[in-house]
Image (tube, rainbow, N blue to C red; front, side, top):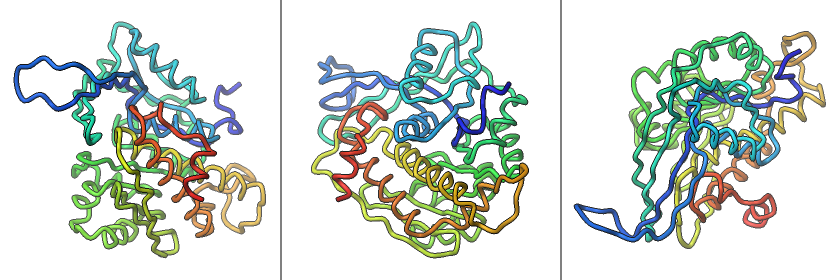
Length: 338
């Protein structure tokens, strides 16, 4: 019997799972000094991992593929996933290795971050038969470029199965090796920095169009407090206005929470479309319509609502320390949207 029945998983992610330690300071040190910490906290981290936690919080059924150490940090990572209903059966725990840790200095006055990262010593997870089945049965595969050999194998399975490939292109994460990965993804939502490097333009509306023309069904560029730009599967452009806050406590996880909230809504949309069974298109897995085919037929209004929801979640998430702990309630999000 499978540990990943289709009815239990909407989104599967491949990436790094970390423990984030936040230290709020009055100012960044410029030399040798002693400074009292304003506050501190610990949270689960990693772009894909946090996106799955967010999606889990808002009702999507998620599972993570990764490898971590068998240390205390690794146990904390697994416990935190459990809080957000993320299935961890595909996370390999490697004996005698250390899990990844990020120490993050947050400037109290602006919410700016300085990140110091300790990479996990666990080896890249092997691509197993259980991973293949998990990806075939999920609606969405969410990636960000980590574990590239595993990721490429997973993308090949997703392409064959009709599973949607969603790429998080974070700032400072673009390199030439990511170009074909970006072109092979169905949903490409990237930060301004990634978009500019990938497309060669600073005009974000044009960047969206280029990303779409290179193969993405949904192309998006997020620009923090300036909002986001999208192009839908049929080529229609959409501008999502931001939800500005009076002050920013911490921007950690804002982009990750945007991805998670958007994908959670998309999973709900696809679940509903599958239930309706009104789309006339090619089928796979017996009578199951491919998720990619359903994505092509999503209504603009549904996609816009998903984007507005994601923008509101990301905005409210800046009002506390950490990428997951400050996540707002559904009621808070709905009140902000109005």
